[in-house]
Image (cartoon, rainbow over all chains, first blue to last red; front, top):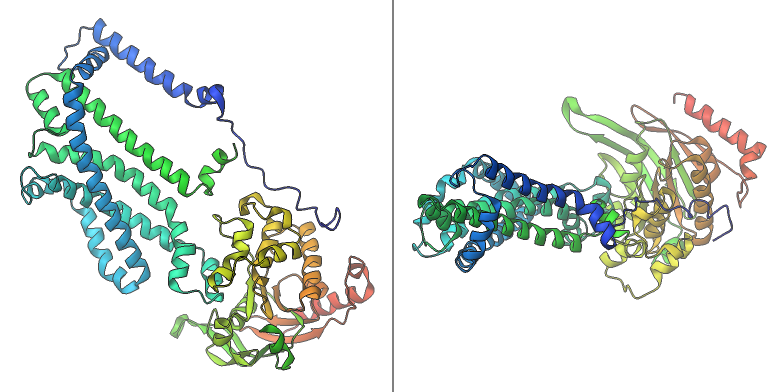
Length: 282
Length: 261
């Protein structure tokens, strides 16, 4: 430093809001309200069902659902595993192909002009309507048919968002790279791909939720019986509603779980991003 | 590389009848017409003029970021494209254009990485010391003030020792106080590195304070209307800003800007 004058503007880094999430008190402060609302909701639900003597086929008591979940745990865990496999298989397939096509369209404009109209058309198709047909494209016991349907649904948001992130680069950043005579591959690695990460993760969050939904709905259209969709369908047709509800609870939990995995991956791979900085300060 | 280029005594920048028109047909906009400009090694040349005078376009022609429509431009005696491929110049924009996911040091190393140079060298540290940001080497850009970010951008532009430094309104987004400090910094760096500087600005006092020569431009179409040697002694300090010679030169540039060519 050259004394006080030249360090004038060095001494004040832009302050970020500091929010403490450390310790039990911090966690309570952050998640307390949501937990309270959740538990309160369950209590109200239980009370309303008991008070008005609502029948189980309309709405079972949470306590009953929980009891059935424990009783049926082995079966539910088994079918959930199978459904999860379909969802993850399709999620991975759809994500990998979505990213690959996005990279190709951004790198070669001819590819973009050729592929984009079809990609957009694909999005307009109500893909879930294809599920019964896709189911019959593969052997009846194979999980690949469900994976395929999931992959088609996941592909579009991942592809479009990633392509958008790869192209939403500041013009001056590209001029800078041009001034270094950087090769296209260097520009991708150092500028475009980091810019695309936030877009990619936004799409992936949507995609994880979609993957579970689409896998279960595709299962409704037939195939192996030991999957969540068929379990729910069977229990509902036998009027064993608390069991069906228990399976729905588990389906929701794996959806939340997958979402959580994506959140952690996002956090790890782009801790520099503006949306995550407040957490970083701790 | 840069030192022997300088010793050949070729001008660093030599533009002849340079013209640039964006678009074609009825949408065509003539940004620059008949620009002749020679810049010798070691000069500090400011391009000043109203918006639309093509000063930024001229800078981009020098950097081969846009191609001329007419005329020719040579950098260090080579075609502008060759000079860019040879990494003859570093550039600083109005926005610091730092990559958010890289630390200060990693940002300064960016050009070295792309050029395949050895990152184990202390070049980045040396550059950060030059811009007096040594202790912020592990910070991220968003942890720095605007002035500090622009210093990092300057360190990055100079990291590979280019013979020419192009600056496109680099302090335009800074407050007046920071701006004057940065002007001092740039002059100090210019003295220390002996780099030729082409500096685009719309601030008359800034152009006069920094430059050895002020190139005054006029708009529609962009042309050079006058070139004024500032002839102020070096080193320039805060006292320079209060000297009569400085005032006179500021007035002279202001009048030149007012005239139509």
